[in-house]
Length: 458
Ligand code: ZN
Image 1 (cartoon, rainbow, N blue to C red):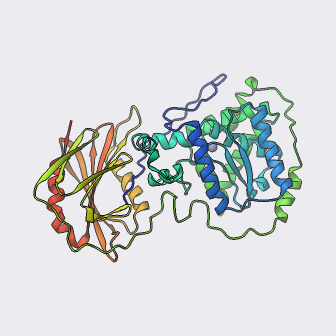
Image 2 (tube, rainbow, N blue to C red):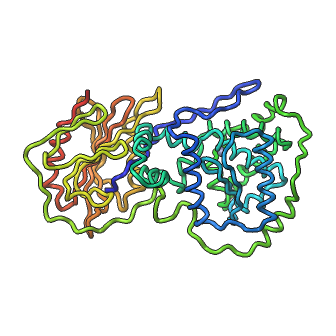
Image 3 (cartoon, rainbow, N blue to C red):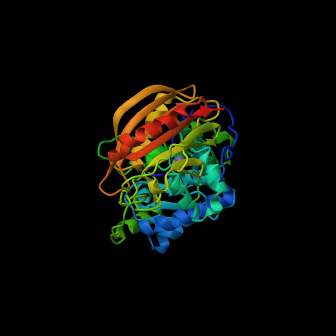
C-alpha cells in the first residue's frame, strides 16, 4: 500500500446571490501557505509545465498576450506577484494560472476568441484566481491537518512541489490547485470583471466567452473544452451577475486594443507542428493521483511479532501495537510497522493512521466519506479492488466501517490484503489502513484485530 495521504474532500460549494454592489472578494481562510510559498510553488510547477508542453517562441504572438496581461495587472491595480504569460501550443481551449503568477494560454483559446476583450476576460479571470489564492486555499481546506504539518516540517528537505506530491497534490487532471469551486468561480468573475473595466475592456465579454464555451461543451464530440469547463464550473448566470455590477465599475469607453487578434490567429495557424510530449500532469514523478511505480522488493520470509505491546497516541486517539514494531510520524500521518515491512515509501506490513477533518460547521458522513476515501486510494494504488463490502462495527465507542481490499504489494509478484477502518468522530474521520501480503494475512489478522480493539478516544 502506498504510504501517503489520501485527499478526502468533505466539501460542498454554496453560491450566494446578492443584489447591489458586491464586496470585492479577498483571499479566504484557511490558507496555510504564505504568498512567498505560492510564488515558490508556481515557479517549480512552471518548470515542469515547460518541460511537458511546447512553449510558443513566436515573439509577436507572445508579446501580444503579454501586453494584454500586463495591462490588466497594471491598470487593474492587482496585487504584486511575479506574473508571466506564455503561450503553449495546444489545440484545446484552455488557459491556466499557477499559484503565485505563472500563466499558460493554449493556442486553441486564442483561436476560439471573437475579440481581444474575450482573451482579456479569460486572463483577468485567471489572474483573479492567483490574487485570491484559490489554489492554495483549496489545498488547505481539503487537508486541514496534513498541510500545516507538512509546512512545519518543510525543512525536512525536497521542494515544496515534491512535498505536495507526497500529499497527492500535483497538476494532474482534477488537481486541487487548478479545479475551482463554484464559489471561487463567482469571486474570480467578480474581481476579473472589475479588473477588465479598469483596463478598458468590456467586462461583459468575460461572461459572453465563458457562456459561449459552455454552450459548445454541450455539443457532442467537443472534447477540446472539457478540462477548462470542469476546472471552472459555471456558477450560473454569469452574464446577469456581471451586468448587475456594471453601474459600479470603471466607466468606458471599453475600447482597449493592443494588437490584431485576427493576425495572431493566423500566426497560430502557421506554427510548425509541436513535437509530441507527455500531457500535463502525466509525468512519472511528482504528480498526484497516479499509481506509483512499485518497488518489487524481495518479500521477507517472516516478520517478527512480539507478544508484548506498547501504546501510542495521535490526535486524541490511542492504540497499542507489538512492542518490536516502530512508529513513525510523517506529515500528520502515523505509521506503525516492523522494520521489514517498510519498502521505500510503501508499507508491505503494518498500519497507517490518518485523520480527515470535516469543514467547519459540517459533520462526517461515514458511508459517503468512506467511499471517497476508497476512490482516492484506488487512484494511488494499482490493481486495488474491494473484496469485502463495508461492515458496520463500533470502535472505541464510535460508529465505524471495516472494508477489505486487495491490491498490488510492494513485494515482487505478490498481492496484498488491505483492511480499511474508518471511524466517525463527528467532525473528523479517523482512518486506519492495515496492510499485509496476501499469503501472510491470516497470520497478521489477530494482531490487527487486537490493535483495533485497543483503540480509545479521549
Ligand atoms: Zn475559474
